[in-house]
Image 1: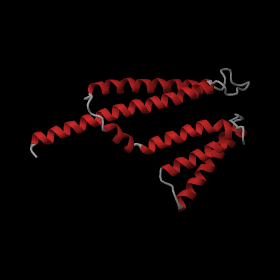
Image 2: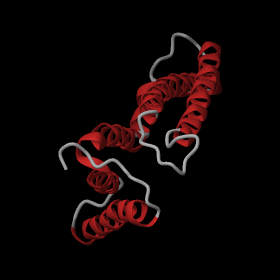
Image 3: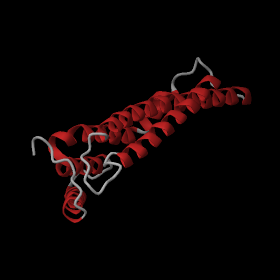
Length: 177
């Protein structure tokens, strides 16, 4: 191999990588934006108390609105980057997704968490979410799984008790439990 061949393949790999990153960013941020839009719409249904003049959904809507704007801005930047790269290259997106499989698995579990919360309630949904994320990140057997279960129970159920009994803020109870 000579230097010209080596340089050509390196430029090709960099183009593939940049195109893959741009395409994956567009898809990932579009999914996040769709999730945040759904949560934004559901935040209006949160019950409010007499101490909240703006309503319980105002703060989550503010945060979710900002997140939607950020996702759209990232998508615009990624579309511009995609247009700059070679249109023939397409290998990089698959590689980019495989490298970030744990992030996508966590996003999928979070989506399931948001969908299940109205049915099974905050406490149980949080417990299952925290346990599932820890399993995704590597707690699969033995002592690590036991520690993951304790952490999920303390934070999932502990946050529910803290908010409902100390701060007197009602969290979703769920239809089934």
